[in-house]
Image (cartoon, each protein chain N blue to C red):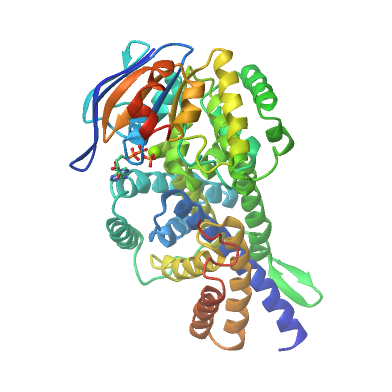
Length: 234
Length: 289
Ligand SMILES: Nc1ncnc2c1ncn2[C@@H]1O[C@H](COP(=O)(O)OP(=O)(O)OP(=O)(O)O)[C@@H](O)[C@H]1O
Ligand SMILES: [Mg+2]
């Protein structure tokens, strides 16, 4: 449903993503793991249009989307939860969710999705009037995820959802990601926490300094000696 | 100062504060969305006043219609400024500063060329008579400014906090990249911010036309005051701008009455300096994380 073909991305003259190819099928969780500065965030930003690729092609449902503005890409059905969450701090939780549904016109559908969000994230219902910036890191992650889901996306991009969260909160977020996938969401998950990523995803891509060094089923990769040593720490 | 003068000065302070608030709020909002200051904002105010001069003073339209005409005229000017100055210079703050400062001069010269320099354009008072407050008389024309300003500020507040586009405008000011990820078109939002900012400055100028000397340079004094208000209030804070505007309205009016306008301007700047020392983020400004 989403495929990257030999995608390159630069900052100035420095290449951060060097010709990667990634396939994402409908209703699966694919994870992209890699250490600091491997180019994961750049890849995600390139998919959602915040960063323009210098070479290569990004296809979504068979259409080229590289070069489109982020507004257009969101309208086509790709929603991103950025690294570091980026909730709108001075907007209430409810307003944050409304912004997620910014392009939608179907009031009934929006109301239904809002209810769905409140079942996934009950705390958000309780705190709907609170300014998002005053919430804890884990709660902000929930706001950011619910906001992205409010656009009714076909693909959800999650950039390091566990970043800076307590183990307990990470567990909770992981549970929700799993549940979202079980009800049919397509998810691209970027993680430094490979343990968590392998638990959730069926397939994985390993990224090293801008390139995909390995890819395959997580059940196979987790037994690979190099992956075990570098990313799983065993 | 006897009690009559005190009451008179108090009333004048509120009128001045109301106008400062309307002007400064527009400046703060545009700054919040674009992170760029519009140095031609004072000239937007001036063009608003000239709209009334032309429509009401010269063409004899009803005063309220002339005032409302300032909305499309100056909003359009704001939109054009966004499109042709701020958008091309978005990556370059200095260029944006130079270009709007240049626009201010162009507007002054242009208006001067068409309607003359030197001579003050006189706009006849549309509402004669005065409100009598126990011996103190305040012209209706001045009184009118207060509810009009409150109505404008209320309308702006309602828009920003209850309309979807208003919420999107706030989202853009807080995190433009993330706003784009939600499908919000930044260019359209900046244009909207400049249209509203222009409309507010234009309305302020339009209301002041009968009680303020109408000249091509009338924006000069007001822009300095507006910047003091915005800095004092906390750059992007609209509530802060309103609070600072009222404070400065009192400071300016009282010091002008007791001393003179130059001293008043100096005291205003000094107050801003004190606020910045005690609270660098401004009265209601937020510290950036
Ligand atoms: N705005 C930028 N300007 C210049 N270089 C950048 C910029 N952002 C990232 N880079 C560089 O691009 C490379 C890839 O960065 P990226 O943020 O994509 O990595 P990442 O895999 O997401 O890392 P992390 O796990 O730390 O989030 C790094 O070498 C980084 O220094
Ligand atoms: Mg990253």
